[in-house]
Image (cartoon, rainbow, N blue to C red; front, side, top):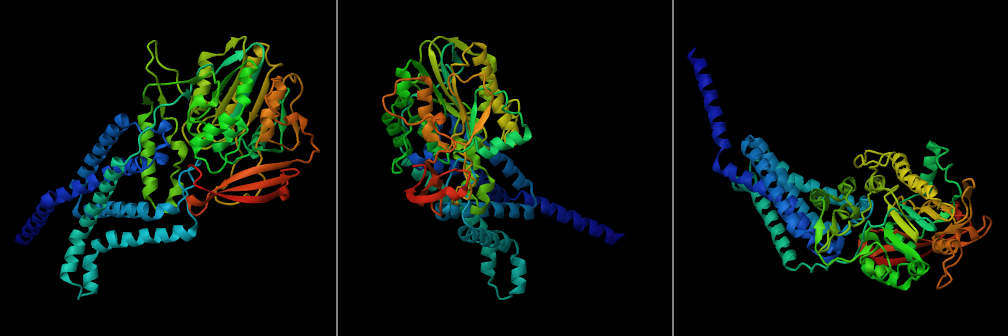
Amino acid sequence: MAKSKGVKSSAKSNKNTQQKEKIKLSHVIISLLASFAFSFSFLVVGPLSFFYSSAENRSFFETNYIYEKDLVPLMLVAAFILFAILGAILILATNKLRKIIVSVITWFLVGGYIQIAFFNGWTRGLLGDGNAGAVIPAFGIPNLILWLVLAGLIIVLPLNMDKVCKKFPKFPKLAKEIVSKYLVVYLLVLAFAMQGAGLLEVVLNAPDERKPQAYLSTDNMFDISENENVVVFVVDRFDMQYYHQVLDAKPDFFDDFDGFTAYTDNIALYARTYPAVTSMLTGVEHDIESTRIEYFKDAYKESKFLDDMAAGGYDVNIYTSAWYVYDNANDMGKISNAFTTDGPVQLDNPMGLLGSMMSYSLYNSCPDLIKPLLGVSTNSFVGHGSQHTKELDGEAPEQYAIDDAKVYESFKEEGVTVKSDKNFTFIHLRGCHSPYNVNENCEYVGDNFSDLVKQTTGVFKFIREYIAELKAVGAYEDATIIITGDHANPVSDKDDVQAPRLTALLVKEKGQAGTAFKESKAPVSQENFIPTIIKSTGVKASEDYGKAYSEIGEGDITTRKYLFEKTVDSQDLDQIVEYEIKGPASDFNNWKIKERHIIGKLYK
């Protein structure tokens, strides 16, 4: 009986000892230090170090703003909340669990610092799909091995020093003491201090923010002329394969598009939205050497197309993304929905942008082979803010952002406005581009909760209803309508083209209403886009823009160009692979590489 009491007394004593160990001052300090280092590194230091580092990085935000007044306080609050939660968990955890968590945090911070400092130059940066951060196995596998070695040194070794010492009795006691008790804490402090010093340096040397520019507003988006209209729907990444997938699911999908011709052998000039849409609107190729902003300015200055449309009596309204297609809307010419602002940039979706920055922070710090799984892209940082002006008589119009569900909702709420002046409307929609987040009714359902066919069906629901309004006011006969993609599906950003890259194209020229929907195998390309609009409308052109789609016969032999933007081992060596296509583009034997242009970084 006395022995039983002694056992109980001993157990009680051990329990009390464990409880006392949990609330030791050293445990509290280590817990708070680890939670502070992780929270502020992940939510503050990581994102800001990148976005303050250069004007190029900051341009992922519209107009080069990072919304310090709105976003930084939100970051600090989020970091403090995470710090408090994680700190409480560590303080209340058992000694073993605490050591494991602190070791993992240290491993992440040390590995992330090494990754950013020495390995991210081998990645392919941020591109439009969010899968371009992957590197070839020759780089990715050694990078992963390094992370595993760090895990062994920072997590496995300190937690198993007793076993190591038993296996190696001559292992110095001092070394054991240092590794088991102090190594992780030392590395934790060192990694966070170096990150903090790096942030301080880039903040002190941050480039100046650019002043707000004119932007493309949502004004006039549903204006329809009772006389003549040109309507262009750019369905992003409307690949011919997607066209056929929709028809496979719904064979009669396009039967009600009377007067339309689907050109099934069409080539878009580029493989990505930048610079594809700008080249559509101007007919001007990127000169390879220019920065993104220089190209926008030069292309709109050189091209006379939009000016010709305005001179021909058309109100020109363009609805597209600021980052991918233009910098200052005033550079585009006489655009009716362009709005000049002298006021601040407003952050409309702070939580969304914070989420994107958190995702980027993880993306930037993680091993190369993990990056493609995170889905971070240039598009992650577009559409969160807008420019507003200090008007005396009300708020500024909303800046257009590519959001199909929102466009359709506005269309249903506002309806169309009928006017007498001739109207040119160019609407850039997300269309067939992932992540799929719109259902067949063009309603937002969340990223990756839809699929290609449903999203494409939803986008065409809006297009159909827009066309129905043209018919309702008797303007369909004289309307020129083009539905196309800005580019085809690139399939891979890092491999040469392996199969035809055809972009879907549906065209109804003026006077072609009432005829059955048909297909044509005419070898056309984006070069025929501007000429088709000019010739269909009869606008007096300031130059010869070339042949319209309808002027190319099915049996014609044309030479077409496809400029594939290829990322390589280092983004400083990105290429434009120029393909020459003679004969039907559907036959890949007709695709030949003419030249490889080394361009450095794509997004200069």
